Image (cartoon, rainbow, N blue to C red; front, side):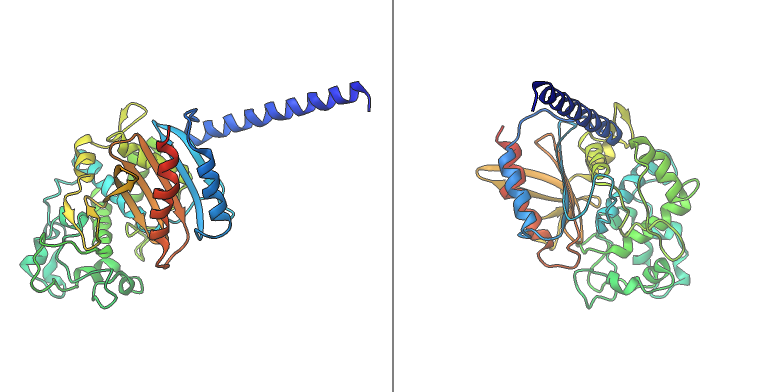
Length: 361
């Protein structure tokens, strides 16, 4: 081969590298994130990649880490891509709480102390009572409503799996009895149907209905356009969960809350609402976890370091983590729906790989 030939090859390779870098930069611009140049333990993340590749961690679709508002780690697995939208199941509940805070700030809802009796004529429903009419919006979003409904108990009359075959989820929920010996506000019980009622209330109260309103006040302001709601049988945006976004857009939702409701220097969600939402105020039935306004709370231990975190959580191992003492948001999307290992394996990924990788520098 001539020297001229190899010079041409080198020039083509350099051009390809330049074009590749240009495409990557452009892709980051389109994603709405700038790329972080902070160091992390790349070897540990490569070990995680390998573990996912050999199915040690099953049905993981993506991992995104944002640090100081910049994209630090971005990984996709099992056919997922940057543009893939993902069903995160109950992670979608937390979006309803955020929209509620905005609706209260804008005056469409008076406040979290409003009751079911303010929105529905419960005398027209089965099992009507003063207790049911007194249930507040705050109790719906903190899972302390006192309904006879507990999703973690398959025999509960208000288990969410009994709701989905119904023709009208809201009416079915409002007809449920209240729990004997447990008043509204007394104890935490995970109750998806209550969040569906919240969605119906929002849909009635905000201009244009919940879906259009959420787009205007939340998604459009975050630059999120590639998303899809699921719907109730009445074609209301389904606040039980399942709203599909890309992993990078889930990270925007997390970063919005890390920044206490600001995005690009503009106020999107009232700061006091975010602070209240993220408070680990309520004991749950799940060891090591507390609850806020449709946000879970726990503390991860990595070596001698404690990592307090608020997070959205959904069936299959889906998570949006917003850390309290570190400038971090972590998104994990997964499709291990209905699998007992789904959440446990994400906890292990966090403590053995992701948090050690970002805490070593």
